[in-house]
Length: 545
Image 1: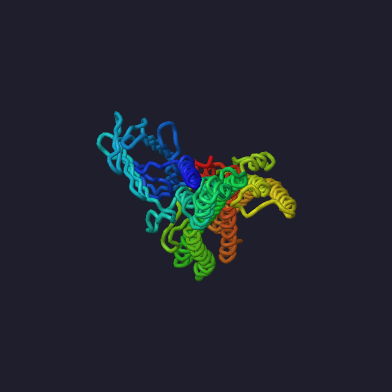
Image 2: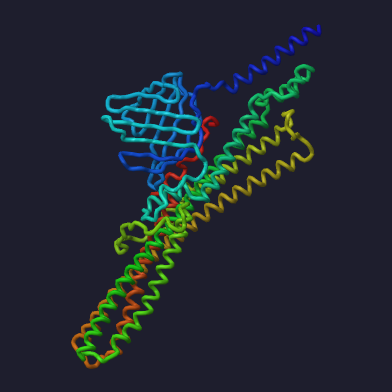
């Protein structure tokens, strides 16, 4: 009798072990383990780009194990190049890519695989932490991709002081800046939370389970070996999935905000550079006038000291120039830090962008687009995921009593726990409504900024044109020897007009900068332009869907 009990216990334990392997599955030992975050470089026809990739785990597709991912050059405009690797057996691998003319079957040889189509030869290699792909056409390598598994910030492509484009800086803000990198850890932790919750659904062996089998405490053994039978564990898993999505969307939102800050700072620096250029040209023109006055002094056409008096009026302009140059250097430092570049020597200038003609741009109305902004809002979507997570938490409370491994259970405090949970749901729904209201308000503000910039540009342009005409009239009087205009009056009036002229010119540039900034804010709200793929290269666990 005792022997039969032991045999039954042994058979039960064997069935438990069998369940473990049937649920978890067996991973092929020779599959290249690719999952992780990668950084590296891609050389495309001689153009080298820094790239980022987030590679998910394999999923089963028919008879193959397949992994899909995109490689993103660190440019704001990048939409990524897709790669699909399908492993059929120990020797057969298929590669698809945006760079490959047609799917190519590769023959595997240890940690590399080789293949060719009619026009291309493909080589793909990997080891523990690296992925390399080469594509050759007519005997010459046209694409070389080298990726290294690394969660840290990639080093700058170069640290030599140089000119940066808006596209480059937006790409660094999107993929590489410090704040985004730090917040990425939250997404990683959320993803691991799903793995933990999913793992708690899968059978696990522990001492209690084994003892339970051999002592007849089968309920205890089932609680450890078959936890997926208990609803509370499913609710934990579903809750962790919702939390992961909330963290993921919050991360995308943070990315967008950091990019928007960088874009706005870029426009501010461009404005200051343009104003500096205009001021420098104005100073040069004034100095040319001063030299002409000095010549006239030697011929007796002007009283002695006129040129010196004029020079003293130029000095404040030169002081403003020095202050503006210092400000721009500081702004470069701020911008460098924001995109994880060395603050002291990375950026020495910004590539110019086409300046819009604001006289041809029509006003906008926030009422025309705020609903679209609400529908697209990452912030509102993240809050909605939190609402769903809270709902699953309520289910976990109700069913926790069924889990012999759980710490919960139904009791006198359970109704209060449910009430608290419902209150949390209600509070989150109110936050969603508040977020919608904030987006509507933000839309109205952005539209007002946009329209005011158009008005300010028109006023500044009219003022600049009037002062330019007045300056030409004053100089013409001076050149014609108007006796009613003495030299000191001429100098004073000319300097006063130049101050106003520089002011209106700066107002024009500032209006353009404000308009560009308002447009970037509008793009951020509506997820247009640089902001239409904020989830690029973010972790995705396909196995949980």
